Image (cartoon, rainbow, N blue to C red; front, side, top):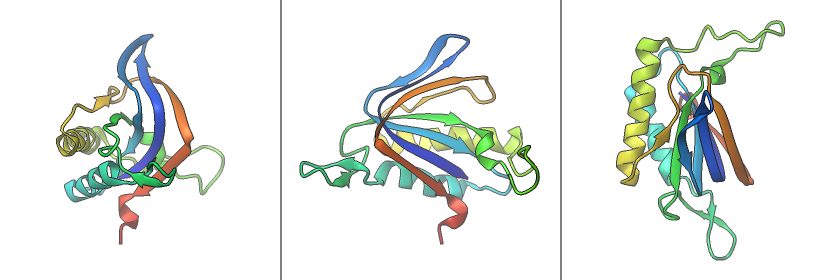
Length: 150
């Protein structure tokens, strides 16, 4: 699994003009599931998401997690995170997981983060054409890939 985590002051996701998920201060997380990803990958990434110290402490040092700042999380599925651009100019998505794997792992990731934080995770709708808006704070953007955890 691959995540793009952005520290935000606000973020939202809309479908056909209707906002379906919205947060204030917290993390906007794009979630990409690949063939071969497992529940262990999902759990490792959920732990990383909620414990990553990318919020400033009183001294202005990134030393606090989203839990520490009582922030929120908005998670949006994005299969294009798995694009291969090695050949030509048209990305290939051959390594992106199909619905049978991707939907359960995306949903499980959202539920695991919610459990770890003790609050609801806002989310988009898997497979929908979504419009994502955010104010990246910093900017701070972190990419995490479960296949690079060792």
